[in-house]
Length: 200
Image (cartoon, rainbow, N blue to C red):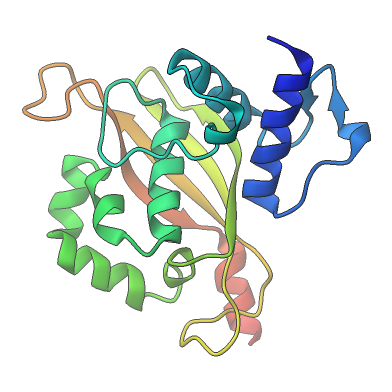
């Protein structure tokens, strides 16, 4: 893969996640050494396989579950939907157990929008997947950082960023629907959220 092409992708991913390009010193052998590197590399490989140009690789959020999506791509798709205010699409990536506990999607949307810990996800300024690791053969955990919208919104927060843990499992091959797909079992806000609220 040409280094200039990889640098362009890394720069676009940095702009998408952080709102600014990486410093020249952080572009080493075409790799942007930052927490989003894993997500960035994933987008590069997925985009090249799909025959996409560099300009499209940071806009590959899926609209529905697919067994071809990695855990990071699933989380990114949910975040992209939430950033656009599309909670219904976000709900589509919830696991069957999650949907039974929080659904239907209209109830899920009310929960997300009206719960102070989750409302900042909707319409957030930007987000980044800052870490990801497997929790077993069929489990994954992703660490997400979100920059909420401030101002006069009802649930505007004083803290500049909020961290969340995304928990995913791969659905069994014999599942009635979405077999073999990575889906989201739950999203947990960082404990720092509660500590920050206690200080307000």
